[in-house]
Amino acid sequence: MPSFAALPGFRDFYPPDFTVRSHIQNAWRETARRYGYEEYDGPPLEPLELYTEKSGDEIVRQLYNFVDKGERAVALRPEMTPTFARMVGARAGGMRKPIRWFSIPQLFRYERTQRGRLREHFQWNVDLVGETDVSADAEVLAVGLDGLRALGLTADDIVARVNDRRLLDALLQQQGLSAVQRMAAYGVIDKLGREKRDESLRRFRMEAGLDEATAQIVLGMVESGDLSALENRHGSEAVSGHIDRLRRYLDTLRDLGLGDFVRFDPTIVRGLAYYTGIVFEIFDRKGELRAICGGGRYDALLSTVSDVDLPACGFGMGDVVLAELLKERKLLPETKARLDYYIVAVSDAERPLQRQLAQVLRGRGRTVSYGFGAAGVGKQFKDADARGAARVVVLGPDEVKQDVAVIKEMATGTELRVNLSRLLKGEEPA
Ligand code: HAM
Image 1 (spheres, rainbow, N blue to C red):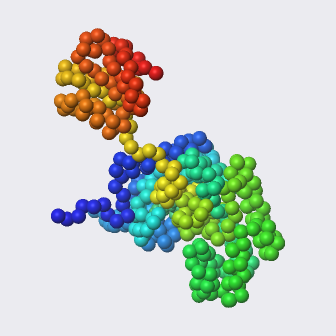
Image 2: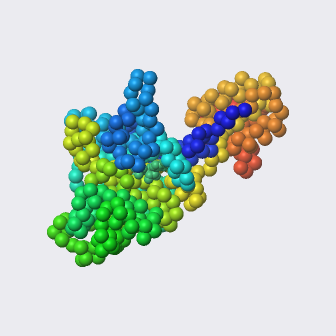
C-alpha cells in the first residue's frame, strides 16, 4: 500500500494536539483583544512577487511556489507581513492611526525540518501602523510578552533580546563599513550565537571584506550586551541618539511592568530584509530552543507595496517552539476529552427522555453525550468514565414513574435524587 502519511514537516492535529493548538491560539487572541488589536486575515496563496521583492533571501529560498492554471506565478504565504502591508496600505487613508491589527495565519516554508522548525506553522502576527515613537515599539513587544505570560510563562522562562538596527548601522558606519559591507556584516552577526567565534571572524573578513583589526572590533562591539559600556567605548554624536532612543524603549517596557523580561543584545539583527529600527527576538531563558518570536520596526515596507508611506512595527510568534517550551514547563492543558454529563438510559423506554434531557442541558451550554446502542447500565457507566464525564444522569423506568432522576458525581461517587420535571426545565443541581 502506498504511504499516506502527512508530508515531512506537516502536522496531523489529532484531538489532543488540537486542544494544545486552541489553548495557545486562545491566549494569543485574548491578549491581542485586551490591547485593542482587531483580527484580520488574508489569502494563503499570494503572487510570488510579493515575497521575492520584500522578504529576505532566506525566506525566498524556502518558498512553496508554482505556476497556477492561469499562468500566474504564485506562492503559499511564508510570512504574513507583506500581505498585512498590502492590505493596510490599500485602506490606510481612511483609517484612524495608529492602526492595530492581529492575525493567526498558517504559514508555509520549505525548511530543513528539525527541532522547532517545520514546513508549516501557525504564527501570531501583531502589528501597529502609523506611529514612529518608541512607545509603539514597546507596546508591540508588551503584547507578545503578555501573550506568553497568559500561557503561564514568567521572566524565569523567557527573555526578549532587543536591539536597534539604526544603532548597529551607526556603529558599523563609524568603523568605516559601506552600506554593502554592513548588509554582509548583518548576515554574520545574525548567526553569531550559532557559529564558532573564529568562523564569524573569518566570515567578517571574507564576506564583508573587513580587515582583521576591524573584524575584531566589530565582534567585540556586538558581544557586549551593556549599553553604557558601548556608549563609553564607541559613543559619538551619531551613536548617542540611537542609544537614548533604546533607553527610552527599555524604560517604557519597565513602566509596563516588563523590565525583567527584556535585555539589550546587539547581536539581534533579524534575518528579514525589511526591518529598519528596533528589532527583537524572544527566546527561552536557558537558550536551548530556537526563537519563539521575532519582530521589529519596518518603516519603509508599506510604501513599497502600496501607495501610502506609513511607519510600522510588529512581530510574528510561532506555535512550534512555544508548544515545546510549554510542554517542558508542564504548562500544557489536560488534553483528555471532558463531558459535563453522560446520560444513561436503563431501558429503551427512556431513550426519548435521554435525548430530550441531553438537548435541554446542551441548550444551557453543557457538554453532554450518551451511548447509542442497547448497552447495559454497567457498560454505559464504563463509557461515561472513559469519556471523562463529571456527572452521570441515570434514567430508569421506576424512577421516571416517580418523576425522579439519579445523578452520580463521578469524582466522589455521591448520588443525588432530583426532580426529573425540574431537571427537564433546565434546573440543574449545584
Ligand atoms: P520570523 O522570524 O521569520 O518573522 O518568524 C517569526 C517566528 O515564527 C519565529 O521566531 C518562529 O517562532 C516562527 N517560525 C518561523 N519559521 C518557522 C518554521 N519553519 N517552523 C516553525 N516555526 C517557525 C516573520 O515571519 C516576520 N514576518 C514577523 C513580523 C511580523 N515582523 C513584523 N511583523
